[in-house]
Length: 256
Length: 67
Image 1 (cartoon, each protein chain N blue to C red):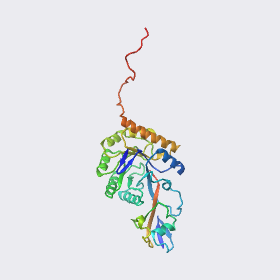
Image 2: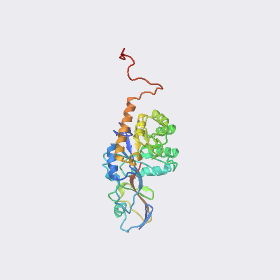
Image 3: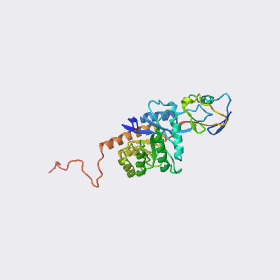
Image 4: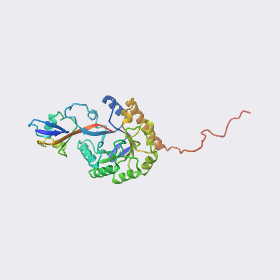
């Protein structure tokens, strides 16, 4: 069970909703993933084409919690504004604080992320900041009162997987709020590794939406997250330098 | 009446006087949207009683796919 603020989820896979080939495939992928949390961005409506289909309107909102992001924000003030707009929909109380500090790497601005998180916590939001894998920053976000901290595995959409497992492990071990590995996951092995390291959840988008077969990849990610979590709970063996035989050394039958 | 809606200069009939009427005008009444007038977010329950005025800067936003 994944607990974020007052919310409880069976699934530890959180899914983004961008860049799917079409809504039919997206709907199937979302269902197959068994996710309960979907992220969205807030953007201007095309007022001259009101009838454009919108994925949110195709969802049974009783089955999913919305996690809008503040993507597009480059300052705390912009992120706060987007968060307020999102909440005014009346559909959500969670917010993924995402303040980008570098256009090329899409890495977050740590100072603006911290500022935005502080303001939004004061305003009663359930705050989940997207952050780099900086260990101290993750701790400071937790100390502010963030309900979960979401360090990236590697840059958004890069599919590079977990490039600093050591930092992620430090963040996970020190934290008492859920740590959700967000961004950079490429394949199921990455998601499983994140969970094996002890992450409480994985948030991914491109790895599923841009896979050759998004529906199949959604299933793979679901199973990877479950397998990784089980492996973490089961307790992995430690690594040894030399071999350890699995079969007994004694009792060998001899032919004389 | 002249408004700036989502960055576009638009001219709407003077009969459109409230936020709700504006949403109807753009056929958005059944859409999940959030409205901001001159940097103030308008509570959904107040759409019918909130007036719009000539020169208002109005943002109408919604949720789109994103990660």
